[in-house]
Length: 103
Image 1 (cartoon, helix red, strand yellow):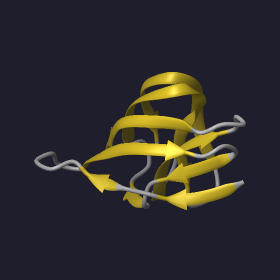
Image 2: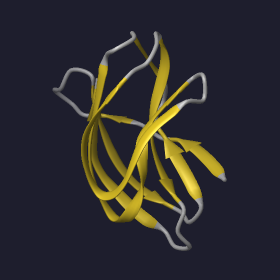
Image 3: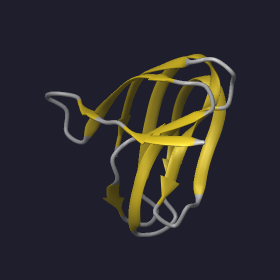
């Protein structure tokens, strides 16, 4: 599995970030890391061209995710640490992921 960090800020929004990725086959893209406290919420709103695993990953390696082609989901953090949002494409062809995440 190849793992790439990609992130863009949405102008004019506080702590909101754009995702506009083409994720190659068998690859996970993730955002830059950001620090959150325990029991905070990270909201992800994405439209994907095909179902993929979307969620958050902590510095400790623990993941929370869903598999779908449209995601409007709030994920709760489990401890004070750094987190990243990810899209993991396990298919044999590239997919697109467009939307944003907020924390």
